[in-house]
Length: 189
Image (cartoon, rainbow, N blue to C red; front, top):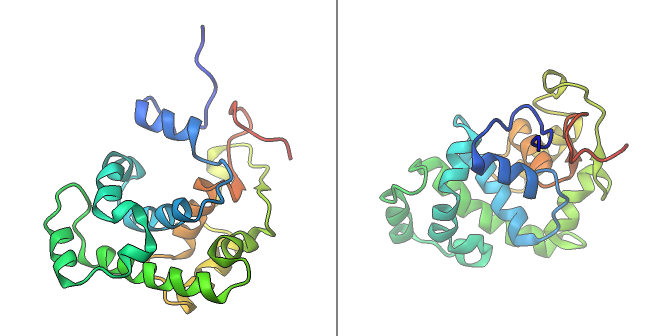
């Protein structure tokens, strides 16, 4: 039986296939999952997403399951532990960004009507945006929505949230559907 058609970026790595088929592009509204994905996308900057996927369980362990309340309390001892953890990307700026992002997340949760989840989804009008790209080469690295999200998050104290990172986050969490036209997971516009 032939394998299912998938987006061209998936390739044949079983971890990538599972990520694509079970998670990428599926609308997510779980607060902790959104916090995790925003920070993992930031950790990916300059690296391949597969590198981060391979370290994902280590990230979850190192960052307390991406519980923003716990991560926001990380101190210099925790930072030192993270810098010594070979299971994650040991980049001081990215580690500090995740801790700072946890603090910004908690503030966002309190200040925004509907909390962090509603705020993030507001950049796509609260519902998944189905794009009509025909080929991988047509998919932009950033959009007006990701630029707006990036600018807004930076203003609220988030780091490693440039427009390209925000667009990858929007794709990963199903805020936008960028599955290729021939992918078995493509939603109809």
